[in-house]
Amino acid sequence: MKTIILGITAVLFSLTIQAQNKNVKSEVKTTVTTVKDSQGEKKIVKTEKLKEVQNIELKDADSNALNKEIQQTPVQVISTTAVTADGVTNMVDTDRSAYYELNGQKYQVALDQKGYNFIFPGGKEKGVLRKTKNNNYIYKTKDTTSFGYFNSNGDLVLETYDDNTDQVKVTTYIMVKE
Image 1 (cartoon, rainbow, N blue to C red):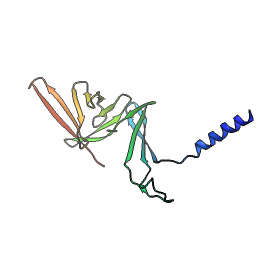
Image 2: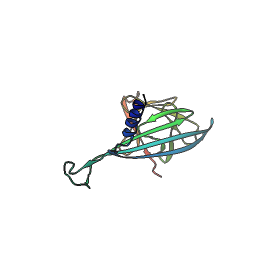
Image 3: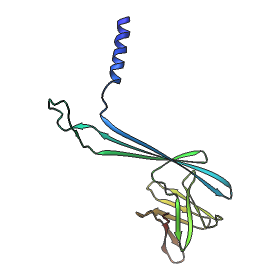
Image 4: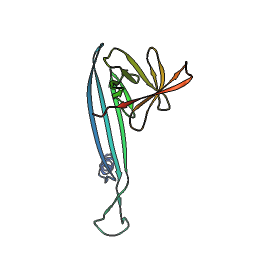
């Protein structure tokens, strides 16, 4: 019995002594944003996790030399963003919260539990942006429903159908870079 216990203990200790075959770098960035509106003050916590993994390979693994050089291998980058608003945590591909400008007025896009709030200048009116399965957004106010997306510059583009003219009106909100 003693031999079996000592054998199992030796196997467990030998498993933890193996060499590492990957370089791993992890970084966590947490940002807390406080938003004040007519309903009070809300805190939004955004946690960005960035993990870089690189396999370790030797240039001449079959040689008899003691000191061997490491061969460069590609780095795999894994990025996840978790946003907590009102006690609900959402996983977000890209956080689009920012200020956007149209005709000299600033509009704010802020995360909420189900997507984004679109806050008009002065904060009196609000719209909502809800993500669809194909990475587009439905924009809804009390008067308007539009289709939206973010272009390669990060600007918010809304396309609205006009019943009177039977055409689609395109409105682009330019992201304010501060």
